[in-house]
Image 1 (tube, rainbow, N blue to C red):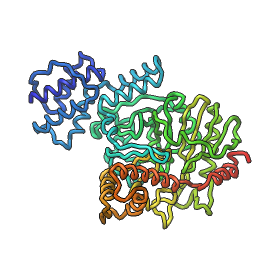
Image 2: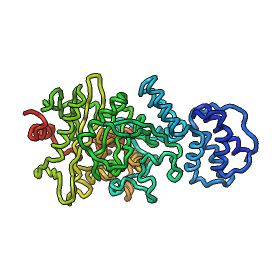
Image 3: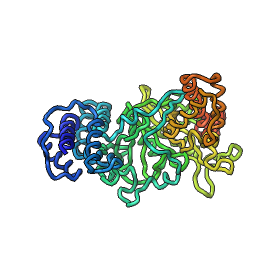
Image 4: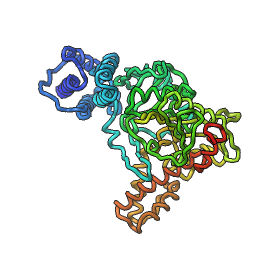
Length: 489
C-alpha cells in the first residue's frame, strides 16, 4: 500500500503546482482521495517534488498500484482517475472566476488558453490520446482517424440528444454534468458566456477534433434550432472570442451532430479548410453593406461578409429562410414532406480585420429507395470509409474517420506491398482498393503504399462532400440565390 500512498501524495503535490490546490487544503484533498479509493489509513508520505506538467504518468502509476492491490479493476481506471482528479482541482465557481479575471485583465484569448491548459492538466481533455490520432492533409482537406471514440452510426440517438437513462442530467451536454460522478464528469469545468442576451456556457471537448475544440451550450435544455437569433448569437460569440470560429450543426438527423435535443454550437482555435476557400462567383446582397459569394467548395457553401454585424445576421437569416422554403423536384431537393422538414443550414462565423464572415452550408437529409441513408449523404460505395453523418466539422473540410480504419488500412497496405488480393471480409473496400492499385507501382514500398492510401482517403472524402452538395455546380447555387431574392440579379 505504501506505493499507493506515494502515488496519491505525488498527485496532491502535482495539484498544488498545476491545478491551483491551496496547500492549506492538501490534507483535506488527500483524505477525499482516500475516501474515493476506500482507504481508511495513511502509510506515510512522499516528501519530494514533482516535475510532471500533465498527470498521465502519475495516474498510470496509481492505476497499476490500485489494480494490483485489488482496489478497482483495470476497466474502472478511467472512472477513478476522473474522481481523483476532480477532488484535487478548483471548484467550478473558482474556475469561472479565474477565467473572468484573466479575460478582463489580459483578454479572452489568454483566458481560453488558460482554461484549455487547465482542462488538459486536470485530465478532462485527453490530449495525449488526441495527439496519437493519425492526421494529415490530402486533396485540400484535413483527414483524421479517431481512435478514442467508437463509430457513431445511429442517427436516432441524435434526435434524443444522447439522453441519459435516469433522466439526470437530461442529456450528455447539460450543465448538470459538471461534477457528475455517474458519467465521469468530476473534472468537467465550464464558464459563463452571454449570447444574444441569453445565458450560455463554454466548455472544451475531452476528445476534440481540432485545436482547442469546444462547445457553447445553451443553459436551457431546448432543442437544436436555427432562426434569426442563431446568427446573432454566433456573431456575439466571435465578438467575445475573435480568435475562435463558431458554427452550428444543421438541426436535422443524418446531417446534424450527435446531440440534437440540446441547443449548442461548436468552435475552436483552428482555421478549417472551408474558412480558406475562395469565391467562385461574387454576388450582391439585397441587404445593404453585405457581400455574398458562392464558394469554390465541393459542398454547397455560401459566404456572407460585412462590417455591420446586424446586416450580416439579417442577410444570413434571409439566406437560411430561402433555403428551407426552397423545393426543386428536378434536382431531388425536397424541403418538406409528410415526414417533416428536410432542409436546413449549417452556419459558421469568424471575425476578420474587415468585419464578419458567415459561411452557410446548405444541407438536405431527404432519403430515397436508392439512397436510404440520404440522397445528399456519403453514397454507399464510400461507407467503408465513412458512413456516419457528415456534420458541421466534415462539411468544413475536416474529416473524422472511424478508428477501425487503422487496422483495415494496415491490411490494405500489406496487400499492396505483397501483391496479395484483399481478404474476403474486405469486400466493401473493393472499389477503393482498385483505385489504390492505380496510384502505386506493382509491389510498392511501404512508404509508397502509405502515401497512396492518404491520397485515396483525401479523394474519397472530397467525393463524399460532392455527394452532400445540394447544387452540383456553382452556377446552380448562384441561380438559387438570385431566384429566391437573396441576391440581386
